Image (cartoon, rainbow, N blue to C red; front, side, top):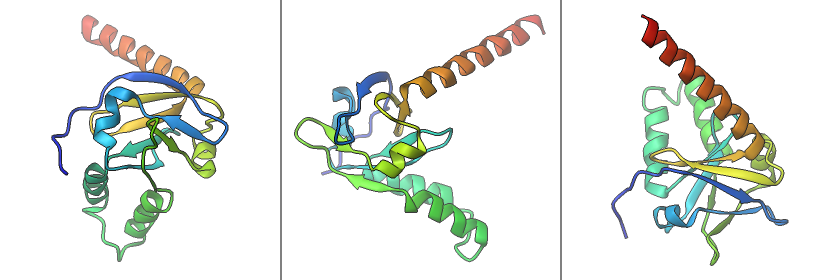
Length: 148
């Protein structure tokens, strides 16, 4: 059953359990009632999409590249090969495959952030470092704008 897409926002801290499961934030779970596609994201994080958003994302990424071109094939492989579909369990958790955890350097502590049409799953320390860098960049940009 289709539902209206809400913007996914917020930052949430979780811990991976011994079986490699992580809870999807309760506030965001309704968006993933039909499952979630988890794949390698950019900047060493994992991206999670609801099925309809996944279809849109794949179409958007591969739209202007032909499957006949090596770049098009490479992009399709990067996006699809690592993708994993999961259904949330009774506690709202998903199992994250070891290869994806390894890709994102996730050992135990996780930060999940809402990024409008998808979520990202980060190793907490990696996210803290990335966020600090982003904030410094934003401060530098604001200083530049203020003095120009």
